[in-house]
Length: 328
Image 1 (tube, rainbow, N blue to C red):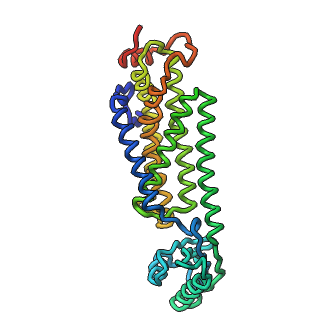
Image 2: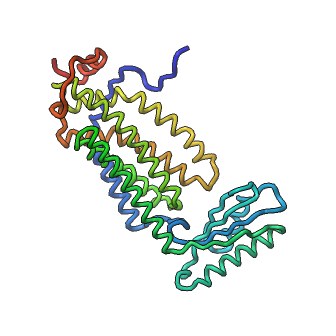
């Protein structure tokens, strides 16, 4: 029985041919993403701007009518609610952003909570209100600042790890690749206006981990080939390294993307933002490993002199190296 191969053996694709165009395109997209966030902003959720959470139990039914609730609460004029099941199937939490002016006039928030709970009691006899909790704007700002610090700390730690394991140029390439992925994801959420909450921070941290893993695989092969092919030009060596790791990259990306796409199109609304961020991050993370993390090594003057050579080279690597311009 033959194994499924998404990528044939001994691929010979000239990825680095498009490095200048790809880099320019990424710079434009990153500038556009920063501009969108600066002008349009992000649609922050309750976690980051404050709000109220109402917990309710539908005692006369086995499951809570989440979709119906989202529609009914949304008609009250306070915006789109975030409704999730928690605990048992008939228990839900309803999260709402604070109405405008609630920071100065807390009665506005109380009036919103009363209106929502009265609506629930009127439409669903037997519903039990388990609690009404408020999240202040100050606490929300702290959550956002700590979330951003977590992202920065993760990227800094990644760069230090790459720097120690390889060379400083590789660390710069890794941090650039991660900044690229995170910036484009921010731009996507600003463009489409999806709610940006702690779930998205979790998705961004996961994207950083995936992108790092993919980049390290490519970088490790580049380092090996730098020690094997002392006279190969850098562009050819990078092409060789990317082609040698291409089958693994494609298989990993496809296997992760398929369930994420299923969640994007068929999953519950409450995790749509998380699923979309993850799916988008996997795509741009794979792209950046090939067209950002690798080509930047050319401009940072990485070459065979960076590493001590090893004796001999694998026959397969020699054949591929010759096809990319290795010199005897």
